[in-house]
Length: 491
Image (cartoon, rainbow, N blue to C red; front, side, top):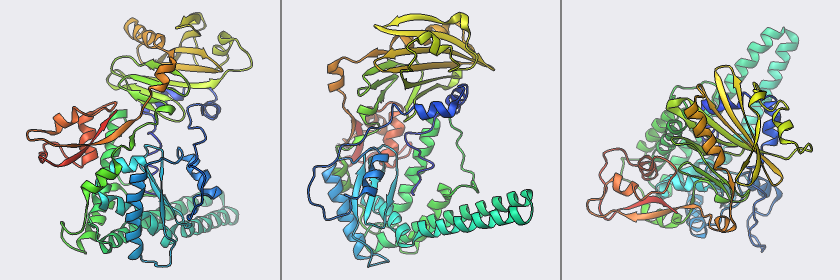
């Protein structure tokens, strides 16, 4: 896979939010319950005859795990045309004719199956800058299939398991652990080499198909920048160190090897990029969260399907995930988490709050209140050096659990948290019908336009300048070309 591990679905919570999650008792059980923000069964395409393998059970199950199929006919036709060109110069001419399926998730990922199904996410379509970059991604995934990487990796993992088990039985537990660790390193190294092999094969194939072979390194560069931007937004430590346990090589290592593979073919400037054609194909594709599964606009989170909204305190950055909404206010060491569970059989909110849901509850602080017509219980808890302002709000068949964490819960912080708790409310019917996704648009740079003026037209939750540069492969200080087309995000 391209980088599923480094770009987990809608990003992992920050370190502060992760610490907050650890204050719950029975954390694993809460996570199993906390699937109420997850994507429901996706709508299916209209029924009809098919010439491909997208009617199989495997396809349907896989698509359901990634948000469902996303309907973008122009983008799908464009990608299928690229696949047709790749097929004519493939390293394995007998392989199936691949057809693309676009997945409805903002996560950047792609993968291919031996059946001839190739999957790309709409998050990947937003990040890729031109036809050669999209071609490089798809050629990389097809190379994994052609080189039988999944089967070979599974075989290596079985061998490692047998060796580790034998060492533990024949010698001793300590020796078995040493052998097991060695075998894990061997499998990880094997997997990293597979990624590099797929990169190199992909570069060769796209060059033979007439595309710019440097498209692979450009896309990998964008991928690395995307990871760094999310790290900067959500407080995760940036690290370019090579993790010997990782199954993927470090991004800089992949980029340098992809550039070296392209240089063996020719100097930069060769091959087709078709940037304008690609931008026209992806124009209108949704960007970011599917609004029906909850979306962030500045400090406000809205979930049309569950019919609620709330606003975080000033300075918070919010992130929507399957399990919960996470937020951080990094300079002040503050965090928040909002999740939901189905209403327990015991209909008593006060009893639920005191049932051990969170450690360190101060019983004297528990009180009931009305929040915009909804029954709620609020309280304070302390665990270690962290203080928590809690609220459990009943709405329909769900309990919404909103937790704020701060090292110092002074009067000012408590007032801000309570103001945010009071912002929780049910959506009106017109607010639900008005929910629309952000979309990719294409803007033409006018004379005098700069990165900053174009970024001012962006509608994104945070850092429009950084996102504009990321989506267009630009760096700070780059000059825009009048008449050139650039991706922006609009509502």
